[in-house]
Image 1 (cartoon, rainbow, N blue to C red):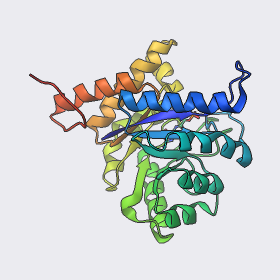
Image 2: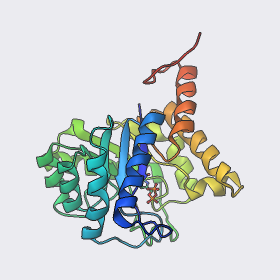
Image 3: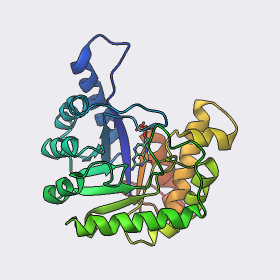
Length: 271
Ligand code: HH2
């Protein structure tokens, strides 16, 4: 079980320090997340939020490479959150060992080869549609079986492209082309994805469905909802928890794991 801390590298419109300040700030944030309990840092230079505009390859490279280099000896696994093969290739050279591809190798024909030849781990995530349109009336006959079938198919494709099965992680893609009800159903039935035999990554952190479900639009609702869903995902067999607020989620998961009698990395005091 591991916490994946989110390190977003996006331009700061309030600072005139430019590129250097942006990278320095992201590196400092990554160091803080590791101190708070993150074993993986997921570095991303392009938002996949609903409605987000794509970022050009050169700009994405400019954002993420200095940050990965700056974090290379921080003591965490480095993950690159990208669907572009060139960005993944540069990231692996800069110290990343995990490619977190929200398109599950569909976004760039060269991605599978980059992952295979780089000997990297890869997270394959389910997404219905494209980020800028995916939240327009998503529909499924049966969301659980459709997500499971998709992940099974992408896992088989990855293996046939030369990626070792042991290197693949799977993710239901909470919030990616799904209604709040779809997200809740997938979290409730996470066991169906765990049954595919690969570690499952869950990303609910601060997502807007939490506000809809909680019925309270405050930052505390996003954090409380993030904690609730991650604790239940732990109980349902998830292995990797992708979050912004590492310290409170780490505490909640440590207590939840102790309650379940499940192992949790790091010190647990019960006496
Ligand atoms: N969610 C986001 C981005 N990457 N990767 C995985 N494997 N699973 C997720 O659920 C996931 C992901 C959401 O991205 P964005 O809206 O850009 O926000 P942030 O990166 O701050 O979470």
